[in-house]
Image 1 (cartoon, rainbow, N blue to C red):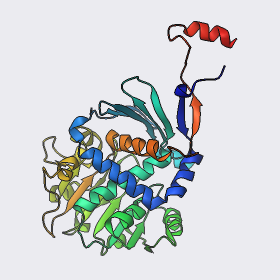
Image 2 (image 1 turned 120 degrees about the vertical axis):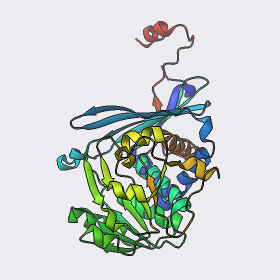
Image 3 (image 1 turned 180 degrees about the vertical axis):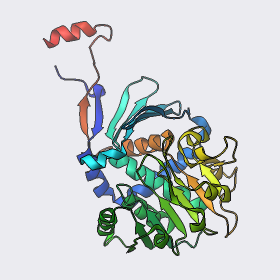
Image 4 (image 1 turned 45 degrees about the vertical axis):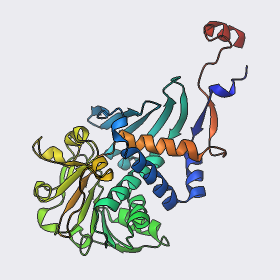
Length: 346
């Protein structure tokens, strides 16, 4: 018994996601996902919003990130297990689903490990286009793991940087990142200390994996006029910046209710003022206002960004062979006769 076409759900595997990325181009795809995120942030108030739903363990965290705009529903399943790299596994893996609110039927199932790296980079650079100094040419990339190359290429494509200064506590990670960025149009400088990495940098991106309160940047390392893109602190008990840096910065977030639990601002009082990025993008709030201002994007990732990425992928695969039709919905001739469908299949 063959399933009807309406019962088949497009599934984008890791292999097909990589084929799609090569077809579109890494920088082009990041830029296009960023445009979708910006569109959705500008209609922020139309979305259901809730902090992600975590299941913490001594080994890491597994989370669900749901949202809906009333017409489509999306969620991402994602884990964060920093100890995995020592076992030859990814720190972060993910998959996501998009569904039609009217019928409740899924309309897309896709890997999101690769896609999350793209959407995280897209969000970082999109925010950077609003907050970073307009003359920025150099970015310090502190933490040279799985996200680092995507971040560097995103800021090149969207913010115009031409130089990246790399640092990681593991020199092999820096060597890996530098090798991967060769021939990508960036001047790449491998650094031996974080102080060396931030020298002359207009943008500082921190993206480390250890699940602990850490001080990747101390207060005396951050001078006036920089933009800090802090994307490593993404769960309770994990931060990267000294508290005094936060007190000197204008802080911008995705969704305060989630960021106060998981972001850098978990180190501050619950009423410490922050600005939501959707307000900056719609003109309801100001971003960078002067050359000496320190702007800090305390990014933890939010479900609307994943929703945007899922919507982008659904459109991008239309009319292509970058997906497989997946038989995952029962489709009896009579919707009330599920048992009869089972018997006929026997």
